[in-house]
Length: 419
Image (cartoon, rainbow, N blue to C red; front, side, top):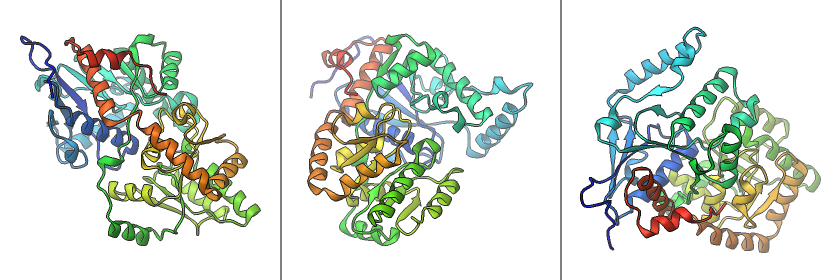
């Protein structure tokens, strides 16, 4: 394959990508980073270097996806030091006299000492640096649903997001809806906000064997057929609305539709568990908490369909993963999701349990519909792959880094977003 170089007298472009996460703490963001690492690692036709900034001892989740032009770049601070600083910062932020100046973190110098030319922040809680930056806030849910955030968290999130959106050379949205929202809410220039869609991460996860699938069935006591909804139990994910729809089906049709909801438990989980008991759905609904990548891929293989009742999304990763796995989808019609689905799945109003129940019944009872939707989803998923995402990112890295663009870069930068 022909290699594209930045120029004979110019050193290779060195891009730092912020991956300072602990596995299992940030589901969607973790998947995005795995997707970026896998895609960039597969590129063989450039001279760039991609440095993934990680905390020492907390990189095992991303290490298997690092290769080729990518390598890990550990920060200097140990976990005890980081925790002590985090506690001190959290305390300081809650003291009115000194709070605001602690809200936006400052670089510890690791990226700068490594000779990075620019830095990409796929993590919302970025840090201040003089390096040119790309910032990815994912969504502005806090401005649409402020009731989901405490006063301190709301002020801090707004300060951090606005600061990094203002300082960044480029702000990333995953859909055209997300781009419009960033422009309207923050007054950003149109050419500063760029749309970069993501492919499915499922194929980077281990492939389950028949024995793995049987163990998964046994561990979670899975029935032969069930609906899948992978999401952390945040209020906007609307688990309660889905449970109310399933309760309507059970009452009116005498049909108990099994549901499996993997995702890290959080402070909202107790409220969902209580609603589950109130609606008498505990026997047919499973909340297994965080599951391994192997088990998550297994759930996509075993499920009958995916239902996605979220009230707010910047992208909707599980929908795209379901498309790639050939799993039929019924999705919320909120925010970016209609553009993402684009005829490849059923849509419903997430605030209308009656409509959710109707769409669930359609999927559950009509195998022909499930087969047709599965095929549409597979075809749609081909429009956004790992390779496409990685090459589009690289084109922007080269553009912002002031390097020569290949013809493919110019085509990718000029293309219309798929959603």
